[in-house]
Length: 178
Image (cartoon, rainbow, N blue to C red; front, side):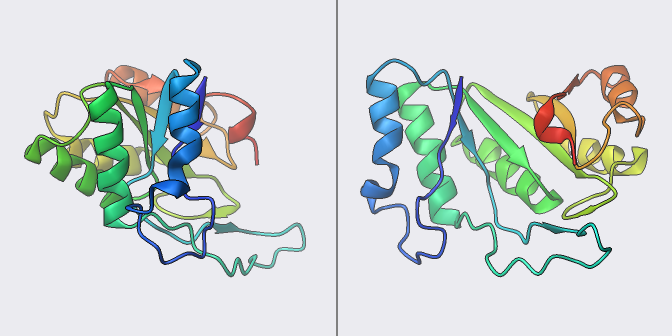
């Protein structure tokens, strides 16, 4: 089971040094039920198209400061907890690779390259050139990775086959259905 390391108050400008924001993670870990943590190395606007064709004006960005990312990675390193690192756009991957180069990325890291489906607007679209972009940035970094399409079809987009051919893994499931 994966539990997410995320602040409870998305509008807060208090950095993650306020450990109260992450008290639930320690509780799950201490209870022995935290099999994997989730860390998202960056911030973005998550939005999509409504049924009427208009763009949803989400007023709250998805925020993880550089301090949050550092705290999340340190917490996982100190406890040797496996971590799923969500990559919603290329800058997220660049920051994760920066932590790898600095020796601060947790040892048991798995990257999730998220692509946007036809009705979601973030990061890169679910195309072969988008996967190629991530793989070029990844280079020869010794990290496991997988692909998923939020609001779309990972197999129908062709990304599943491309990822498997390139040595990656595929995310399937209800979360990916738009």
